[in-house]
Image 1 (tube, rainbow, N blue to C red):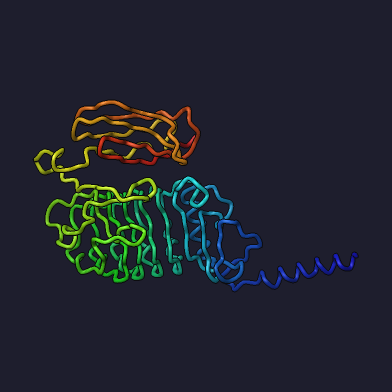
Image 2 (image 1 turned 120 degrees about the vertical axis):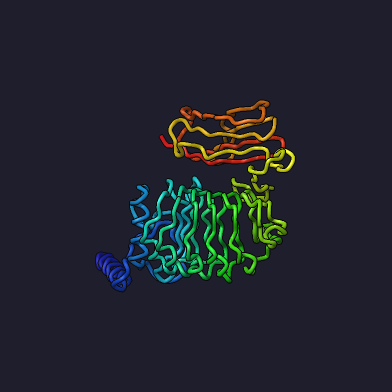
Length: 354
């Protein structure tokens, strides 16, 4: 019996020794967390990919004990292929907000999918152009004001989601993304577009079989000199709902400088700025502008979609209003502030930290 026990122990140690041998540029992990998917290869992980994950954790003071614990990761032959690091409020994404991306993100030269939604990223690092194998980039609901000038370095991009940011211009290099099929630019601050944009091989007006538009640009400020392919697009005033991207919504271009009756020209009758502070504890504030007299309801939902509070529910006259939400009675987590009128429904995400 003892001989058998010693044999099993010896076999285990030898197996670990043999399979824990990685090339010099890789690190072996004896235990792999459940959020890591290995499509091919063993438990050897490329050191520079791990370095960028560790930098991302330390730079944003995220609470992880290991680089492999961040978000949901897919690896192929030791290289990071897909990183899901959206701030979704569940185990699929990150456990706190990402504000800054490290320069070492350029180490992810094999990355094909990057998901960073619902964070507070304001700037893409210069090394972002090193992600030359990237096919899918989802970075909606951040606070980007621009993208990298040489976006065409990401020549294999197929999906580009920049919705719900604060982008006010796009580089002409965008037109060189010949493999791009989906371009979502809705709910930004765009007033102009590159002259070359109509040269892109994008279906400007159609939807795919799942009813997702190939192109959508509603909710910007494109009021003059709009390229024909965009102005004639059926998706010129189309956006996706901010909550889950589960359905299309109408989002007219905001042309406030035009001195006409906005309530007649623009179906959207309500505007809201970003809540501040956010994250917050225990109170956050936001301003709402009504373009016409409306019945206005402002409600708060938790991450599961349950109604938890009503901030305002009454008739309101045209004008600018400031609202506060005191969440001292609620637990930490992600909440959604819903603003609803007879014709419009908007959401803003807030994060309560205690």
